[in-house]
Image 1: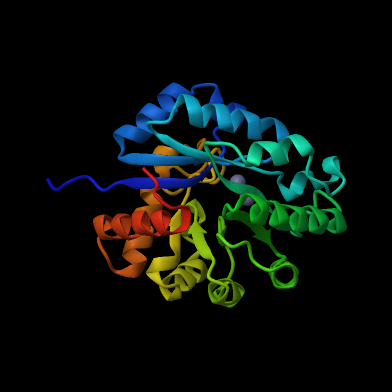
Image 2: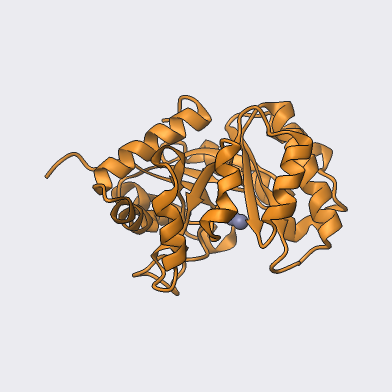
Length: 263
Ligand SMILES: [Zn+2]
Ligand SMILES: [Zn+2]
């Protein structure tokens, strides 16, 4: 047996009750499966605070937290980021701003407020000099227009849980953004997504679970958790025609480049 590859889950909602209720066993399992870094991603003001605490208390496995407000919740915040959250974004172990972005598929909040909140997050990422985690669904045109208008944060960012076509992602690649794949990549019907993955340069790829949602095959339908990120790595490695070890090595490098000296 060779040395086990170091895996990273760059997008996981550890603060959500589904995972928080048995966080010790969730993170133990992740560690045993070779997951050496989980990024605790927030989707509102409350779980930004919880994510920071989790990153502090479980620092052997959770390398950092993000703070931000999901576009689904834009309405609750009238398109503005609360001052407390701006303050938290400066703190350790916060390593990113988000998740933010535009979701025109669910349209859970008015689009105008989603756009205002996205602009505010871009400003915050610039202010605190941290990468931006973006959720973009059925809204690539508007998202790119806003990014061009506002200018990309100096530390760049991630298009998380990417589920579009290569055409959708071409502009993101031109902007120097990273593309993160979730369990969707493992779904039988996602052949177009795997085709897109094939064309994306390896030095822009990341893997995530987006747990508790979107469990990959063969765990589909179950609660997702960071230990399942290995299934995303496996499919991505086979799409790229490399070993899982090689893929893991490359993604580790990508994470270090994007976030600075991680783990
Ligand atoms: Zn998302
Ligand atoms: Zn998410």
